[in-house]
Image 1 (cartoon, rainbow, N blue to C red):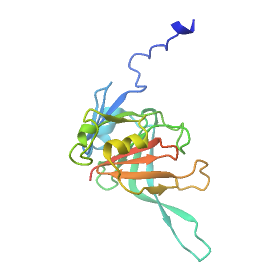
Image 2: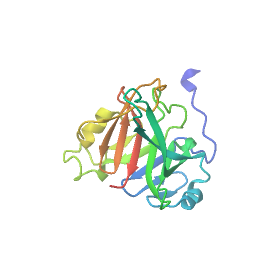
Image 3: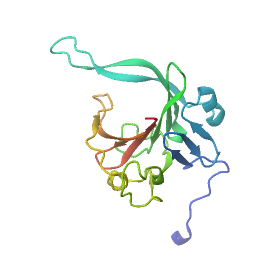
Image 4: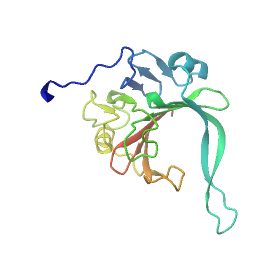
Length: 207
């Protein structure tokens, strides 16, 4: 009977849909394992807390290199910074290539219509809006409100206020079938938003 159907329980210790609480400018807190990953942590600290990453790659920097008036193709170069990719957690961690300390976190929502769809599991992040009170939008609807992976961009603006015009992100590839996204920045975080108004990623950093 459909009225008696229910989802099966998750296996003991499963990290699926684990809540990741964001303390802006400070750290990530993982609800199931109890790990705390602060800005400035080392790769060794991250391995100890989260285990071996699913992948490691150097950060790419897109730039226009003009060889002639007719050659305007985008070029890509590598910088010293590098990412730890935790695809099963919906998380990327960016390390400074010189100090080898964490400088950014990237949280993925895994919504269809984004170039990274199905590469990451959804990161079930929770950003507590009490962190914004008094520093962003004086008329925050409720200090108990939260921003999660399911929050749409219009709701974010109601909570944090308008941050101005977006930067356009093309994903750096002409073969990307999903089109460009829009990046809106606030202090300590930036939202990458798709054309349908859903959040694709949240990038956390220290101002």
